[in-house]
Image (cartoon, rainbow, N blue to C red):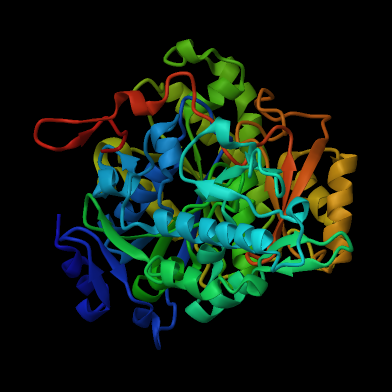
Length: 541
């Protein structure tokens, strides 16, 4: 691996703009963006609906960037930082795999440069100041009117509902914890374009409403300055490299099923200012991360993808077609053909934005030539290119075919992107637009308690904000058991949360929780430190 200062120098980032964390990672000062005009083409990588078989979206993103380098292109990555919740939970790591990883993988999957800790601390500092002012009777809010929860970067179902001030004579109230990836501070940091913008967004956070419907903002608690002090370094994007030396800006980590699912605007802009091609991704499938990348991140930042890549695998498509997970290594054209409807749903949604769409077929050793050709043939009927990707086994060389297909599909210039809905559309209509276009739903139903909360938000003037749908990643519907391309269903919204500082309303559908849980056998059980002091057992390391 190259020294990180050398990686920065290769793409024009002066060493004076780097805050070094050893020889393999650094933070980049915002001054590196001064007088820089973004010149790169932005490639958004998304995927079909995820399955336990794994689709390999991040490994494909990394391999695509390496494939572009193999073609002689000046390429860089702009990715999210993994949350420790999934690292110790079900996923086990999110830095790619095989010959397509970002390094140092173990560090990135764990503490990295401390950004998640800073975000957690800033979020909880505001919570503690709110509770102190409640105790001191220095705020117009009453305990039952506070909406601001606490956060922690773990999967811990026991923290979803907690009692604060338990047993106290006054001030006892129900609250709970979200995971740090779902924190509004995380979203704010990822959407802010400067320290000034960060300050403005924190000030306008709504922490609760009075019984008269008056929103009470964070600015009233005089916590913003202290929160900025905690977030100062976290605002600076992190620079690392792939296993083949491609620069990777890894910064921010909101989930796409319960948050907006995109890395930071600043990291994306840094990459675009220093490379000709930038590969980024939205979390989970296109119905989640892809939609939110465009309708939230692009709407607020002015960024716009020039091309879209959707990752699919033979294995995952067979699962969507009804094959058993234990039998995925066996040829099953019938299940594959049935599962192609899921791919079609995401292709149709992606094409609606007027961008070229390329299918990355992430190849596995058990895939047969007949199965792979069936997918290529289906893609031809949809009018999109399908390229085989062998980036896990072969790195950049295995990404050449995909990289070439993406480059050849790029238009000389991209037209302005059209969002799914207009700002002035009613919130219910915005959700219907998303649900029908991306999920294939017949409509959206709002439970009475949620409707009352939405009415409160709209009466306070927040109805023009975009919508962040919190929905299961395991299905196009809000029922995780409905695989493939479900038909004849409606989306049920059971609750709303307001992220006024980040600039969107969160609609919670189905059984989605903003604090995930550990599985029966968590990945933490296989993670260890060997006699040489090396961390082992994290996938991708």
